[in-house]
Every structure is written in structure tokens, then in C-alpha cells.
Length: 313
Image (tube, rainbow, N blue to C red; front, side, top):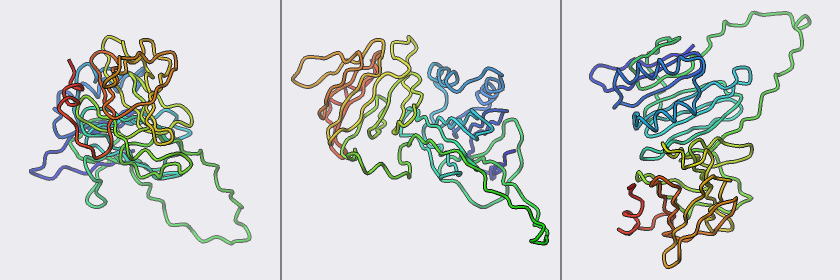
């Protein structure tokens, strides 16, 4: 069961969609017709998050959107996709938050053992009236799992009370999102000095994985960016950019067509067959179908050449 915050008069809310396995929040720019079509798609028995993202990549879809798929109800494991101003926060074994970068890029993640879930446009509110919702589409800017109201415990004789062991909870497996509040692993080098510029104008910090369906793998942290590829030139898991000893490195993830690395002053180099290459500021990574990303230093001004090089087409 979910509960939502009714939209006040004069506001411009989005749409919340709840089905048996999905909960979705669309931004202010979404229309009722699109929300209805997406509800019909998510109601399908064979609907999967990856297929929904493929469809949104072809049809565009709203710039602000958060989608949560229940992958395993018993383990309370969910898959998350978010972009734009929608904020997805979860509580359980640990508290974590997913939020998308500016622009149209998706951030993907997975978490297990969750006890609470909230999707909100902007910062979540903690007060105000809440209405119950089981399934359907409503106009709102915030939706969350309904809090269980437990009756007050009755007094019992301690001598007759059974001993109850605490349940074993699944360890959370979180893929950090942009601006996530999780502290990075202190054993490796910090990546705060490097930025990857996306074609839509967004920026993400390494480590980052690009691909048509960049499903996270066990032990892999960082941002996962869904790259549109109508012609399937970009592989599901195509390319990873991370920082090693303070130097950004591009690693091919067994992609089919590889990535063309364009470095100023050097001949273009095709990165393929799980190869890796060190990068420098201004290097351009061409994943295919005019999807170009540029490596830069955080806080450094971008040149007109860099802006021009990352424009699709």
C-alpha cells in the first residue's frame, strides 16, 4: 500500500503511477495521456525496467522521472532508474538516496532489504495530509510506502513471553547516484577532481558506466548512465570511466563495436576487447550513434571546442 500527498490548489504536480511491481513519479511537464500510456505498459505481466527505459529512449518521455521496480518482494530488493529533479530515497539496512544529474541521462541502482521508499519532485516533505493508494494514477509531487500503524502492545507476563530472535536482514547493495550521501571507499583514490561531460549538458563524476542497459554487477559502485542507442551500436554494458591513482581511465566492457578515443594532438584510437587507456582533460569518448562524452577537470571552464565536440550530430 502507498500513500501520496494531494496536490494543493494552484500547484503544478506530476503524476504518480502504482502497479503490482512498479511505482513511478513523473515530473511537472508530463501529460495525462502519457501517464495513462505508461500505466498500461507497467501493468503488463512481462514489463521490465530495461524495456521501459528502451521505450523512453526512443519516444523521449518526461525529463524528470523516477521508476522503482520490485525485483524480489521477499528480499525487498528493488531496481531504480531516475533522471532530472525526481528524488528517490530508501530506508532499511542503510539509508540511501538516488537523484539524477541535470539533463536527460538516467542513473540506475539496486537496493535490498528496504523498509521505506519515497519518491518526490524536489525535496521530500515530512508533514501534511496523506491519502492511501493501492494501484492507479494520481496527480501529486510525492508518493511513499504507507507507514504501518501497529496497535499498542498488550502487557504480558515476562515469564510466559517467548524469546524472539531478530530477523536476518539482507545486506544492502547500493549503486551510488549523483550527490548520494554515501561516503566513498577511503581505500581508493578520490575522483572529485574529474568530471565527465554528457552530450545533453549534464555532468557526472567517475566512476561511471555507460551502456544501453548498464545493469550494475556485484561490488560495482558509481553512476550508471543509460545511453540511447536505437540502432543498437552501443552495447548493454559498453564503457567504464574510473580514476586510478588520480588519473582517469577508460575501460572497454567487452563491447561489440568499441569506443573511439579522440585525444587532442593524437590520432584517434579504438578502445575494444576489454582494453583500457589513460585519459587527459579534453579527451572525447565516442560510443557510437553520435553519443560523445568529454573528460574534464572539476571546476575547469570548458572551451568552445569542447562544447561543440559533445553536441550530437
